[in-house]
Image (tube, rainbow, N blue to C red):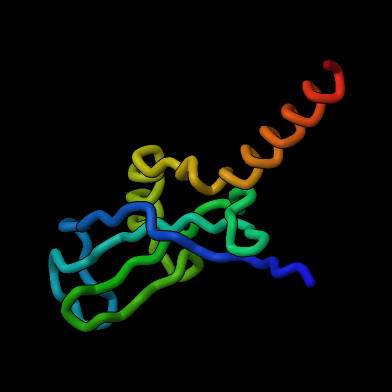
Length: 110
């Protein structure tokens, strides 16, 4: 039995002081969080499936998904996206497989 699936890990969070909450209209309480999704086999990350972004109001705790963003929040997301890199650990399984294949091929040659 092979256990596989997908998970997410937190990459970074930024406070967005220029935006108001759509629900409670509190100013300066919005936080934008970036999460990296990855595929895993036996809970070992194999490869990245991309990033997701959510915003949360720290006052009323309302969470907005990417498809609910206003145009100004989308612009802010695009400005912050280069600051969030996909972690190397999301590809650790591919590195392990590559190391095993390299070892097997070098042992077979000698």
